[in-house]
Image (cartoon, rainbow over all chains, first blue to last red; front, top):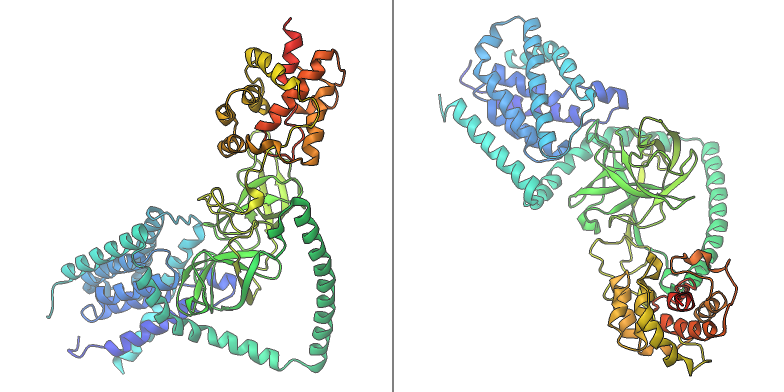
Amino acid sequence: MSSELPRGRMLLSALVGLILTVLPLPTYGDLVRPSFLVVTVLYWSVAAPRAGGVGLGWFSGLLLDIFQGPVLGQHALALSLVTYLVAREHQKIRSKPLFQQSLIMFAVLAFYEAVVFAIDGWTGHPLTSPLRWIHCATGALIWAPAAVILAQGRRS
Amino acid sequence: MRGPSLGFRFTLYAIISIVVMFLDQRHGWLEQARFGLQAAAYPIQLAVSSPSAAWRWLQESSQTRDALRAENDRLRKQQRELELRTMRFEALARENGELRGLRDALPPVADRWLAAEIVNTQVDSLRQRILINRGTTNGVFKAQVVLDDKGVIGQTTHVGPWSAEVILITDPEHAIPVQIERTGLRTIAVGVGDSVSLALPYLPGNADIKAGDRLVTSGLGGVFPAGYPVARVAEVHRDAVQPLAQVRATPFADVDTDREVVLVWFSPNHPAAPTSTAMKDLPTGNKALQPQPAPPPRPKAPAQAPQSTAPSQGEAPPPANPSSTGAGPNSQGASATAAPATGGAIPAAGTAAGANSAAAHSEVPANASSGARKPTTHAGTVNPTSAPSSKGTTSTPTSAPNDASPSANSKDSAAGEVTPATPKQPTPEHPSGATPRNP
């Protein structure tokens, strides 16, 4: 890892991820839409855990809370938790091929959604529709292309 | 490398998150912070929604002249229809207000209104929320009613300076108190999470409801005023095994396709305005809803009054049916004090009766005197347990003394009366009915 940290690209990609996350889509597109921001943040936690990591996760989660959370701090907690786990294990994850990384990300996203789900329940905003888990699968699916695209910028 | 370790940073952020969540959830202390954050987020939301807004603008501006003219004709026709209907509506509202004696009902309940555009942003895919482009700078407040041209669409949840988040009635966390227009049955309609249906989960299996019934707001709950259309019942499923009926309704509002909604401010003193649970209209409120002077005595038979109260006071049976709770006090009220009149079912009514018992004999509402007259006709046959509904059916005057005592008693009961509009209440002439019966 270079000493120069890719902060600018990181923030830009996080902003793009946020815009993609809140972009209006027709109903079905919306249901299968992965959480682009979460995937982006996870990527930076693997690729540059020092620059990104927990802080980026927390602020991105807070943004998600402002845009869609019933309780402030909900996505912030969940996202900082998964970024902490991923950043701690970033060496192992980075050494895996992309397909296995996708599987790991599926588990991570499911864990993230489980935390959000639990906080939903504790704070009295339960949302038990099974559709809420779809984005974990689609997020895992776009992991490989997202990793390639984001890595492009870094190598150039 | 630099800074604290990963685990430390995570712990720090986790603690901050939990504290933030706690404050936001439990105390609402973060309303100010939310306000600022919503303001900060609004430019992003606008930017995100701008492509679709631009596309819509492009579409509209490239519409052909014919399409515009057709739309213009349609709108003009619609406006004419609405004007005709409104004309009738105003006449009906006035008539209704006069019938009910509610002069305050004459001005419309909606005080001010403001059109708002839906900022086309995905708030959450599974929660039914929308963002509108009006905020506190426009006077929008939390839990404000949002309508579209067909019916209730939701209420505001988080209000920022230039934007507000609206929770739709179809959101699974939203419940709206409704009333079946046909029967007046009140219940609650909750959202189920898709934009075309509401559920009415709290109706018993034998509730009088059928497909096609209109649901309007009931005015309870303190947010929505009474009488605004909400939904139409789509299907009623009654299962012999289930204690509750499964009812689905379709909201009138085009939750999906709306582009503009209307925020409404209601005049707080209006009778149809949202009632607060604080019952603030009890001590003051409007005059029509206050306890009114009791119906006056009939002018005739002045001599019998003291004579009849004496026996009735001795032999007055305990009130037998709920409607006769005023009867026991009535029998004593004339002779002794007004205090027993507080035994009435409604505390406010009882105190009013006590307060008004002195002045009760001054005014003569027409229906009250007719109501007081009626019991004299069936004094001998009515028994203490007879409901007021049996009043009209039994009408056989039996004996002369009865004719005297009920008239006096009817006066007494009238003294304890609270609402002159109900001629039923003088029927519990139990003392008089019991007096001939006991010997």
